[in-house]
Length: 119
Image (cartoon, rainbow, N blue to C red; front, side, top):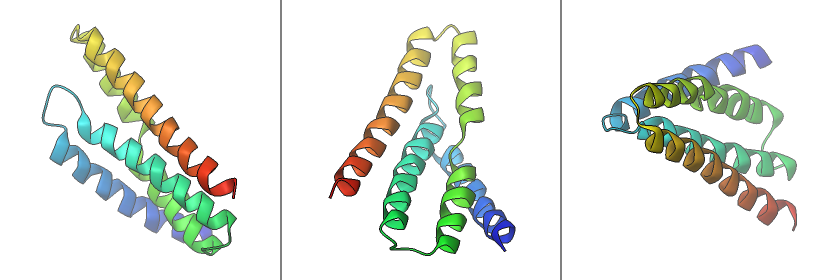
């Protein structure tokens, strides 16, 4: 049963990720990927906290965390876009893209986990 949940969540995550990219990857920086990774990190942190407090079932956690968030967030696209920025000699943009993606995602996840798991 877990494979079906992961498959279904992954399909929804991949479709959502594609939509984000088409909506926001129209400028010099790939904002759609940035947003998908930050939103996905936030969602995963919230799901984890909810699951840890037994607020959702294991099946829902599997569907949404492993399936949806796993397909929605994308390290491979993030890496490719970073290298493309470097190849286009947009070193400052590449640096800012990496720094803001990682720090924003880590900060949000940290805030969610520290806020809700310390209570």
